[in-house]
Length: 142
Image (cartoon, rainbow, N blue to C red; front, side, top):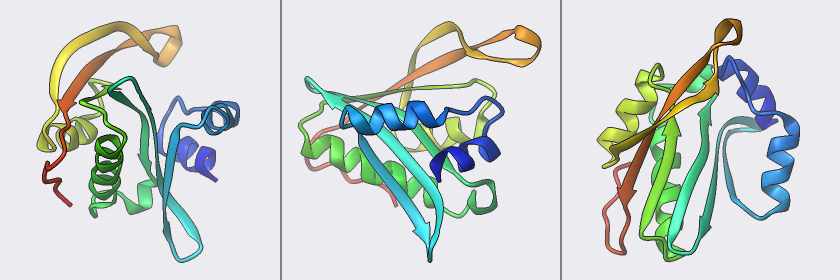
């Protein structure tokens, strides 16, 4: 299940309730399986010409082999199909591998959300806001 991967991949994971809420409101939710094993997933909302990548996660045992890049590419294609012009996301400044993935796929930093994420000992961590223009005819890396 996605929330089980979430717990292994993130120190502050989404809850099962958050995943269920995303499904109930009709967000784009895609998974990657290896055989019968769920190894990654992405959740994205699309509305009024914008998409927002809410969660992109690959099980730690399957990271660094291109699955996150493949899933991101697929979600960006869906954004185009649903007439989004921009895709936004938030990422922890400490998540270097995710930042690298997003920058390599055309995202740019456009701002910061102060104290956005929970952190250790009751502290909060900022979120970098990244955005990318998506238009029909874009070539997505795989």
